[in-house]
Image (tube, rainbow over all chains, first blue to last red; front, side, top):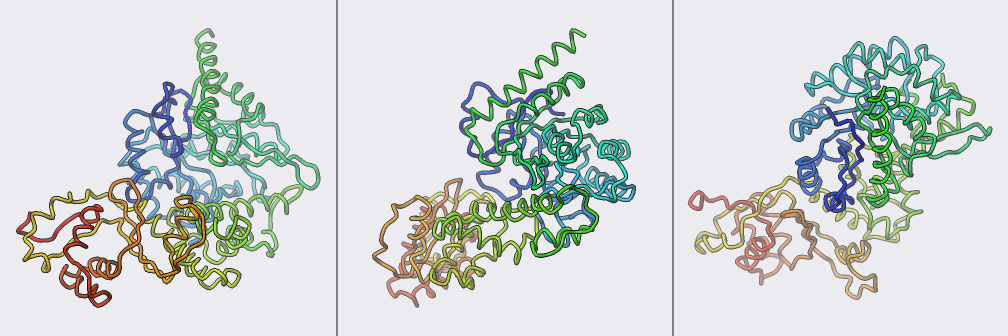
Length: 281
Length: 249
């Protein structure tokens, strides 16, 4: 289990600054696929950081929502990483990213039906068997919906958790992005979300634009500071759940370490307030 | 459903998959299309910075947009993506004026492979002293897993160094061929040009030849090849992880 503190995504360019700093993140998170080489500096850095940091391993390539069977070679690589680093958490996405032997390098949407639910539950169970641990599954940032969908996303996630025993990773920015793109209220989505399953929260920057018809189009680009709207949503969320492990992601236009750390400290201050008000209540 | 969706992601001329709901489906589907092509293009740029620097960001992005459709990654391990890019560049008509570009890409591919290669402690240089000179030619050595050799008809190590900020950009006076060694004995990367005969020698060693047989091949390229000197250089560079002789263990 990750600590109920704020953490940061780890980027190799921050290695020295992170270790030299007086303030350390509550935990670090890395993308599993970036550590699938045989050796060298990436593994040396991660081993060093693992020695005194809680670690979240976050997969971005397993294609759990894919129509095809899971990639066994990739599952084996993930198990090797879990065996080597013994992460406090492993998480993946409610999305697909591979099809017909091609990795598409994006988290793609799927329709929510009884049929896709069964498939995702089977895939999550297979991952948990292979890794010998409970995993967390993350809600997606989506830009489109399918006419065939019959189950609301929050119910779909709750059913996956109930049937497979997995936990959920609640990405607040993805909630904001997906709800805005669907014309729904993020607060209403969170009101329906199975909060008791949440093992981790994600926060990231997004890009705010409009489509040709002037409707809001939010894009989850992990390339800027967290928006005021996302912070607000986060604070109202942890007021209900109490403190949860909360990660600041930043994958594009990566800033200096101090800026990333500052975002994590903002989240930590909110976690501290949530802890105090939970105690008071 | 995913077959149609995936095909439309990689082919902008293809009609959108059926069954989508949105106020502006085309523009919203374009977000996914852009994520896929732009994301893979950036993954290539990360692995081939000198190629991008030589052709410029705009040319690189246009080239990558074609390449990712012809050779999308077969695996989610993107640090292995782009193995076929050098051959693609060699045949890429708009880059025909840059005949050395494919070899620059080959050097960058070797660099990435060495960067992620397995760790192995090199033998200390003083270990060489424990080998009886009379035995040298019969021995085989195990080279470091990161070691790679590249032979180019162009001064590719110089071009690469100038386009990755390791050397000041300038006129290249000598356009002779270069042989290169890429190596990562610990965590520091080494890219050096090799003297005549050394590449042939190392390629033979990689293939499992004895030091004597490898030296004979090198000798065919340059009569002045010095086995003892070449071996000492390999030890000093940290290129050797084992000497395969039972008497030494």
